[in-house]
Image (cartoon, rainbow, N blue to C red; front, side, top):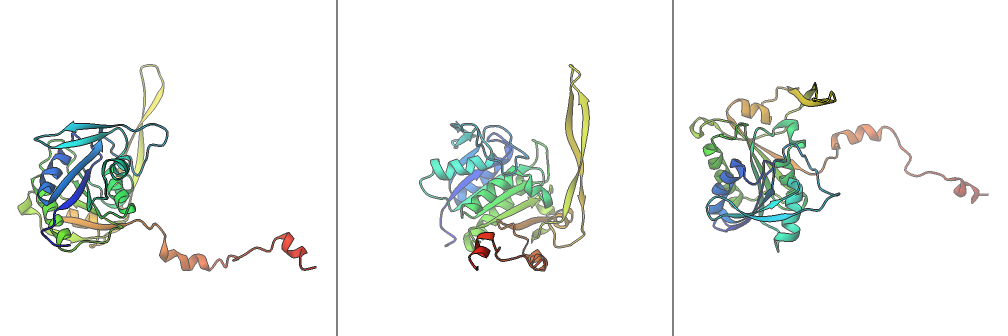
Length: 271
C-alpha cells in the first residue's frame, strides 16, 4: 500500500456518537482518507462483544461538528460495525478505527470493552482495525496528544499495513505529548477485577446493587501494556481472534482421548 493512498476508513466508538473522543478521532483521521462514521446513539461502555438479536436496529443520520455527517445506531458497537459493513457501505473499508475511548482498555479490560469489540469485529470481518483509549475518564479530557498518536499510527499503517485479521489495542497515557516517552509494542498483562457490590435499597425497600471493585495486576513484566502505560509510553498491543490455548494442547493430549467410539451396532456386525 503506497503512503499517498487515501484510505476508506470506518469510525466507531462505545461512548456514543456525541462523545468528545470520537470527534477528536475524526479530526485526526480525516486527512488520511474518506470517513464513514457509525456509532451508538447512547453510551455503550462495558458492552463487550454484545449484539442485538431480540430487537430491531435503527439508523439515523446526524450532523456532527462542522460539516461532518454520521450515522447514529440504536445498538451496540458491534452492531454498528455489522450495519456499516453490511448495509451502509458498498465495499469493505480499508481500516476501522474505534474510540477515542474515555478510560483505559489495557489488560483484561479488552474483554469488557465496547471500543475494542468494535475493532475486533472488524478483524473478524478481515478488516485491519485499531481501537484507541486515553487514560482519562473525564468528559473534559485533553485529546491533543491522542490525536498526534493516531496520526503517527495511521502513517505507519500506510507505510506498512498489518494483517487483516489483527486489531491493535492502543492505550495512551494521560500526559502532554512532549512528556510521552514513546510508543511500545506490548502484550496483554495478566490481571483481573476483584468485584465488589454496593448493596442498597430503593424507596420501596427493594434491593439493588452497584458493581464496584478494583483491578488486580498479577505480574510485573516490562513488556506488558500496563508497564508501558505506568512508565509514560503508549501501548500498542496486537490482538488476534483465535482464542485457542495452543500452549495447553500438549497437556490435554496426555488424556489419550479415544479418536473413535465402538458403538454396540458396530460390535454386533463383527459376529
